[in-house]
Image (tube, rainbow, N blue to C red; front, side, top):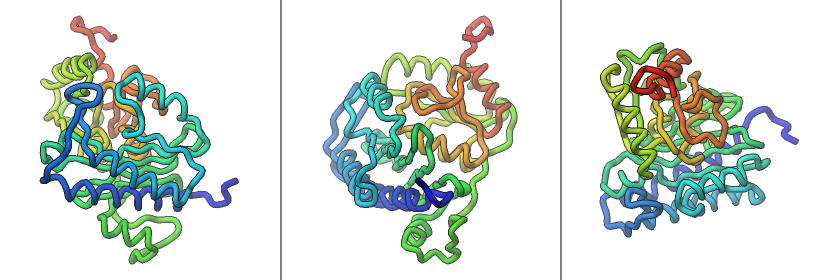
Length: 303
């Protein structure tokens, strides 16, 4: 039974693992890579993906040898396999959810837009989450009992070693994250992604066209976890995407909630760990308008 009210140790382990993996792959972004396809020609993997997951698993198991881990690179490719894997473990008492390189295509094409995403969940509820951008040395992190924050990689390293300048048991170093307060689609900056699977990509394209004439701008950075971190950090008003996996979403959705944002499935249902079609926003008003716009039929009615 847990005695303390926060998840400091779990968050420190997640940060330690994320720093190790991110620093490993970011050093190789400009070098030669062994690239192959998984579920489709658009779903790429390199030798660094399993290497980074192995590093993360080692850090987690050193601290928590009995905990379960769901990782992208140790799950069979394809939407059906990832759904099945998530269904089998999402209610585990202690579950780590790992995407060692979110944005592998960016990594392959030497675009510095890839992150590490790690979440820790208990009985179907996320308790800690970290997204690490090694190119910008930014660590987005939170746990139950803490605010969501953005730390530099050095601040994060100092914190896990107990040498941070303002170390306390109840606060994290860095800047507190706050979502944006825009209440409607008009004038917003939104982001989406284009999944590797053809049917989902068609849905994403159609939904983007529905919103393009109403927003200030659309962004597609090629890494769902990075989009989610940017919503939590107030850099984007909102984000939606179809057919995402649990490891794409768990940490980022938790950060958005901790930063005061709103999250639902694109079908209007509450978010849970098995949701794959996601919409997030800084405010409930913007989120509901996004759902209405994205799911509208050509005649203006809903789905």
